[in-house]
Length: 70
Image (cartoon, rainbow, N blue to C red):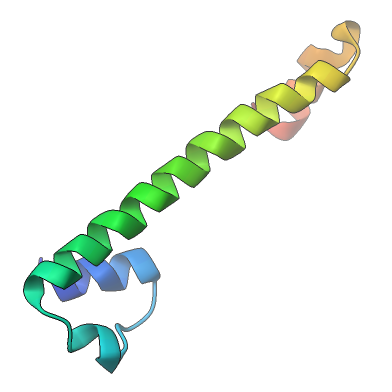
């Protein structure tokens, strides 16, 4: 898989010409940074979702977890 393909799969769109014009090293860095940001975002959303359960009464937490797929 080429780096352009990596960016295409990350962005889920064709890579714009402005990004294609970047050097290989810059495209590699961009792909790495985007992947890291997506991972960080997913981790933060998971943490926040479990933190939100603190606002649910204890006897309902199991049912709420099942309902939202946690």
